[in-house]
Amino acid sequence: MSIREQLEEIKQNGLRELENFADAKELDNIRVRYLGKKGELTAILKQMGKLSAEERPVIGQIANEVRQTLEAAVQKSLETLKEKEMALRLAKETVDVTLPGESKPLGGLHPLSIVQNELIDIFQSMGFDIVDGPEVETDYYCFEALNVPKDHPARDMQDTFYLGDNLLLRTQTSAAQARVMEKRTPPIRIVCPGRVYRADEVDATHSPVFHQMEGLVVDKGITMCDLKGCLEQFAHEIYGPETKVRFRPSFFPFTEPSVEVDVSCSECGGKGCRICKGTGWIEILGAGMVHPNVLRGCGIDPDVYSGFAFGIGLDRLTTTRYKISDIRLLFENDQRFLDQFQGR
Image 1 (cartoon, rainbow, N blue to C red):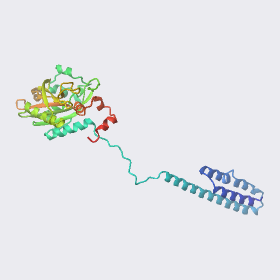
Image 2 (image 1 turned 90 degrees about the vertical axis):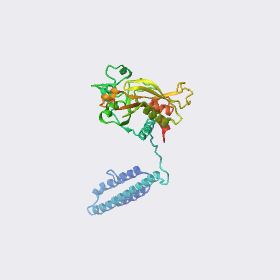
Image 3 (image 1 turned 90 degrees about the horizontal axis):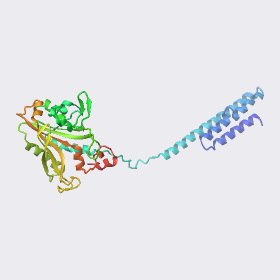
Image 4 (image 1 turned 180 degrees about the vertical axis):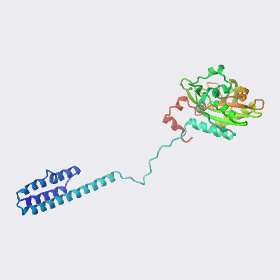
């Protein structure tokens, strides 16, 4: 078989195989077999040295035509293969734009935030301003300015996280009282919500981190009746108008007289149950008339002005309101627990 006939056979065989291949790998194998450095076309060209000077240009031109024909066929087959792969990919990834989109879960407020926001609305409707205070406080504002000097036995009531250099994590939002009274001239009417810290053991009713809302009113002629009316209104807004409120004598260094405030148990209506430990009452806050020493220390004349203060435990209020048996649930971020408060 002459070289010319061999070249024609290579062209026909190559074109036939390029019409029937399965995938990109087989296509590349065909290309290498016919056009590669060790391919059939290269092997034929190595025989051109045996040809006469007149035949070489003719056979060389035929060989180039065969190479160009096969290269063009390979390129066309490659483009066809890419089109098929793209068509398969598009068919696989087809999206029906008429289908409804996937719904994403919406976040919601934490139960503590729900209760805190509601309290803010209640007290703002009574004319209170909302203020904030630092969580890292000085010993002076957290204790001494509130009539609790360094040697006062009431210090034993607080398990305080001290940070050194007269700094500590505030044990009560009452620390904001002195800061506000130093800067403002009465009348003063504020509430201060926020986190507080005490070295308590963690259990179902205690946590080293919890939340309070401190309230303070200072003006001329403020009496215990004003305190009672304010807190009764608050209790009725939170627990309902049928709720009963009682005041029990107590002791706080920064108020005199001081009281603990209870509300009738919403679970049993005051008859006695497991929630209220059979008493019919649930303690919700402490309050009292601002001690004259506190007013005097902040530059307010106690002979001219008087005031009342109260401290609400937001965690206790939240657990009693939603009948949560373990305060730790408020801090564990269990999605199953938090989902129960969606939309509230």
